[in-house]
Image 1 (tube, rainbow, N blue to C red):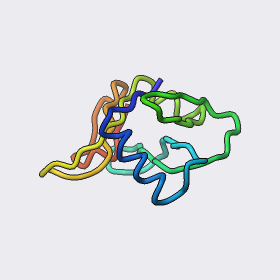
Image 2: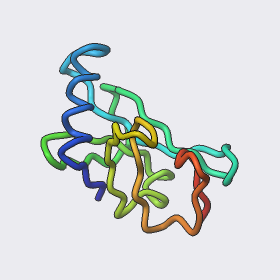
Image 3: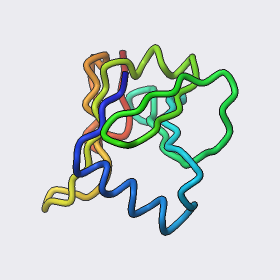
Length: 106
């Protein structure tokens, strides 16, 4: 399961309304790249193939089966503080993360 904090929920709701409309869900995935080897990806999507579907804090999340192995137990947060603005992944599966927080290794 992937958890979504209150701040992340509010920002996702704002982005959905501005970019894609209410009929799409948040897609969270992992791909190769970044300075640590794996990168997080966020997008909006309405396609549900063989994805796992989670719902937390009124946010529906789509995750493909391959990415799920890396994301189980992750919490999605949003920060708008002085040290940077954006989504943050708190991933218990990551053995290290890069300074920007956008890539990780297991």
